[in-house]
Image (cartoon, rainbow, N blue to C red; front, top):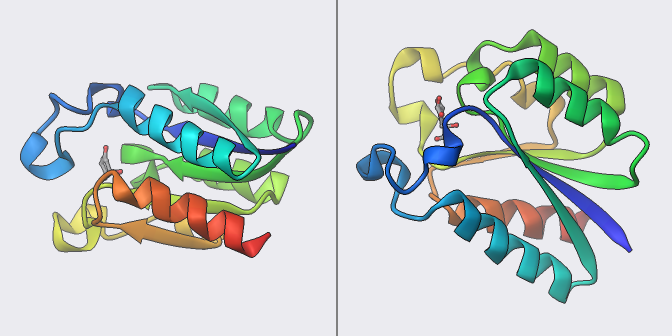
Length: 144
Ligand code: DQA
């Protein structure tokens, strides 16, 4: 069975209560359940991981090298704009990754315009709220 790893970075455990006008009302468990059901309908297993810690995210990406992960959907959240370590981890494992942002980061503060992680991902989906995760799953499934 193919396996996709979903990674969510800092503060995304607060989805549903965190600035709903920007990030929407859907909670992270709802996003994970929806994505897992959709993946499973296509014969794909979805593993999920959320952490507020940069090092833990780096470790989880490295672990993907040996646990059969064939695709990564990642919302690095604030680390998108700061983390050389997460970028290097994604580049190191060379597993096709899609970067997701709930909000349209390009239309927000200038510091959100720069993504350190996007250049090592296959593509970026931003601005479509929780639907972005579904689009990322579709992109990975269609690439296969
Ligand atoms: C985010 C955008 C980031 O700039 C922000 O730090 C987040 C969430 C998004 O999904 O829109 O935490 O990645």
